[in-house]
Length: 92
Image 1 (spheres, rainbow, N blue to C red):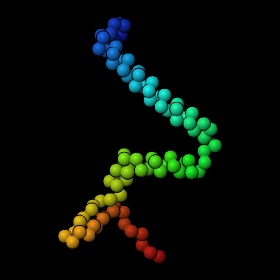
Image 2 (image 1 turned 30 degrees about the horizontal axis):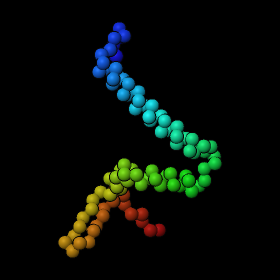
Image 3 (image 1 turned 45 degrees about the horizontal axis):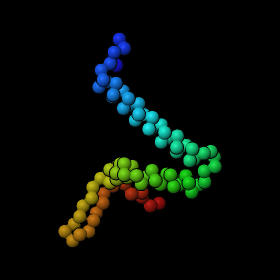
Image 4 (image 1 turned 90 degrees about the horizontal axis):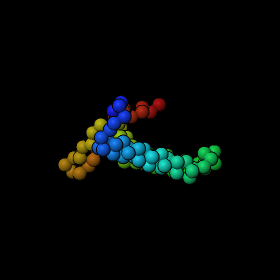
């Protein structure tokens, strides 16, 4: 926006669109907070469900695979060999 207070129709439309997007994001967060209510009333299964839902989301799952797996090889006979970014813990 311009300092002199004059904006074009395009700038105004963009400003309104950004405001609507932000409003929608905040309304979604408010709805989640209302559904949760008092966080101290959450049950362990509710917390576990939320954590598992987060861990198995597409973004996190792909990130975990990239961080832990260094290479996947398929042999001629169809066996799959997976190499990880960390070493196996030694016994003992």
